Every structure is written in structure tokens, then in C-alpha cells.
Length: 516
Image (cartoon, rainbow, N blue to C red):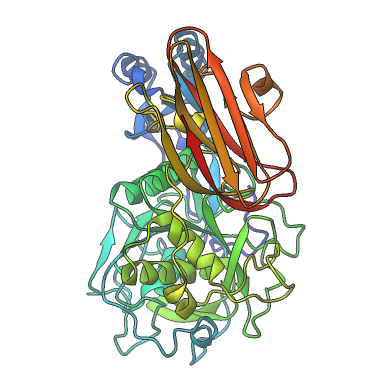
């Protein structure tokens, strides 16, 4: 399990045994099994009979012992009721580059991101950290208003070290002691996803934390964690959070000096990914570079609260750059409640100060976090119905139980939508549309750059890859700023999938799409 190629927090707090799951077996000896929404009532008994334990009700996700999972999965596949299965493994690690420097008297990052002369707002949009839990008895958090624990913060004594540090960067209060976070009066919520595993976070624990935050209402979710392997259940939980209106922020990782392997969840679309800078506003050598980096924030010699000894120290790592952006985003959202999460995503990265290589780059993304600029940056175009990157996102029983609202229906034959697309963060937009009985369907796409348009059958599983071609009904890929697709439906009315895709070499665009 990749741990951002850095000093593990576990080296400081010692090893902690993985707590056993029900029946005496480790939860790491289990498989995650997810039922389709239509099968939650009919097949739940099969999963429970196999020893399955529900871990995410909104997804129909169970933890099943490995010795029973293989046979169960085979049966569910035959019945057509399995949505996904994946091993439950260590999917994230909590790590920093340096935990030994003495506490510096000045939080240098305040002037770097422009909050040194600003008055932060009172409580507003919440920030949820899915981490190792917070030591609520630390002087920074003891009696602090608007601090909420979404589950037990365990294990006592050593649990909460990384989470306490991350939480302090977000929201340490102005109480006359220690340090002050970027948004001191923030509503701070904590989900302990490392219970019983020290600094190692299992797939199902991260899933539970992301969903707990999403189900609490729109807010900012901070993920200062990561690993090299993409985990489908975590990906699905993040998309659920995005669909429910939350902004997900993740640390890019600390592998900049070690080959920059892609880390997850930072390298997922729709996740605001943050790199680290030093006091000279230069991207730190350890900060992971990739096309998924959206912006950077201070991450070197950051004063933090430490659960060990209930004191303070300094640390390096993108683990602390990410909560600076999360806290700043919640501050901006509190002051600008008219923004939706997608607009906030764009505001935070596009208002950043360009540093290093001119223009967007893989080290700093759009640049260095600039809170005053974010507070004043013009609201971008709303991007409705996200995430809708492929067929799985918009059909029923795909990533979500219920299908996305269609653009056109039997009762609404014409619709127009304006939206945004980004080759990295929002690679495709797929919509459901109605093909009238023995009638003609027409879609017209207009943009400032070259985008492609296609229409796919309702039986299509994807609009990408080789298999997609056999399910395509019509296609528009001519050069230029407009595309028109027409299709005559010879038969009963039915739904189909209409997809907008950036042409080769196009990174981003806004567009207008009319379907009739």
C-alpha cells in the first residue's frame, strides 16, 4: 500500500492492531459486495446469510467474509443483482513529511494565502475531515463550539493524531493559546476512519466517512489521505457526495521526489486536488505532480496541534495543504451561499495566483490559494446534473439507484442546457433524452471550441471504448464550434444517451446544447 512515500505517522505513535470484525476475522479478510437498488429487498437475505454486514445503507454495500464471498458473488451475478464487488483492503494512509520541527511562533501561511488582513466569518458551511479522528480533549478543541464528531473518535490515547493536526489547520479557534486555523469558527465535523488500524484506513471506513458527510448536507469534505490503487466503492461514495452537493478536497500526495505515481482519491475527476508550497511560494519537492492537481497551498513548516502530549509542533505535507483549501472553501461558501459546489470548485482553483511555470501546470495546477481573490471571483456558469461522465452515472441502477433527470421526455419534447466540460475533472457529459415514436430527434451543440456530439442506444454501457461504437446511433465530429446530430426513430418511443465530449487537444469549454 503506497503511503505517499513519506514518514508514516505510525512511526510516531507505534503500531496498532487491526480490530477484528464480527465472528473473529479481520475486516481485511472480507470483500465488499454491493447490491443493485432494485435488489435491496429481494437479495439482502442472501448476503446476510453469507455473513454480510451492512456498512453503507444508501449504497446497499456489505462487508462479507472472504470464505463466503466467492460463492455469493457467483449467485448474485447469475441473478443480475450484483452492482459491484471489491476486496476490502487498506485504501488510504495518513502521513506527513516531518513531525519533528519545533513550533514556529508565526503562521507564515496566513500572508501567503491572503487571510492575514481578513476577518473570517462566523459558523456556516461545514468542513468534514475523514481522517483518524480528533482528540477533543486537546486545548484547541476542548469546549470549542461547532465541533461535531460523526462517530466515536478511537482508539483513545493514540487515535486522532493525524486528524487532530488536520482539524487544527482548518479550525483551531482564536482562544489565546496555540494556533489559529484558516477558518477559526468553522463548523468542524470529524469522522474517524482509522479506528483499530492506526494510520491505515480500510476501504469501507473511508466509504462510511464520505457518505456520513454527504448525508449531513452540502459541505466541504477533506481527504488528507491516499494510496496508489483506485477503489471503486470509494469512487462511488465520492460521486454520491458530489451529486448531493458537497465539495470534495484531497491532498495530491507526497511522492514528488519519488516518481509521482497517481494517488487516489486525489486523481479522481470532480475532486479538488491540492499540492504543497513553501514559504517562498514554490511548490515543494515532495508534492506530487499530475494533471489532476488543481491548485496549491502552503504545506511546509505548518504549525499544527498534536495529540501526542496535547501540544503543538510543525509538519510538512500535502495533508496540511488540503485542509487550508477546505477551510478557505468553506469560508468562501459561507460568504457566498448562492454558489453551488461545482461553482465553488471552479472559484477556488481559478482564483489562485499563478506561480512557477506560466499557466496551469502539473505542480501547482492553476496556482497558489488566494482567499481574497476567491471571495471576489465572478461566479462561473453552473454545471447541472453532475456527475454525468458516462452512462453509469445517469442510468438507473448504475452508480446511483435512480436515473438522472432526462433532458427531454414524452411530455417535454424540447430542452436547452448550458454547461461546462473539462478533459480532466469533467471528461464527458452524458444526458438521457427521449426519442419519440416514429419521429425525428435533433440535438444542436454550440461552443467556443471544438466539441463532439454523439447519440447512443439505451442499452449502451458506455460512450467510450471499442464496445461503444456498436451502440452508437448517430455522431457529429466535424471540426468547428457547432455540431448537429439527427436520428429518425422507427418504432416505439424510447430513451437514449446523448454525450458531449471534448475533441482531441481541447482541455475545457462551456457549451449550449439544445435537444428536440
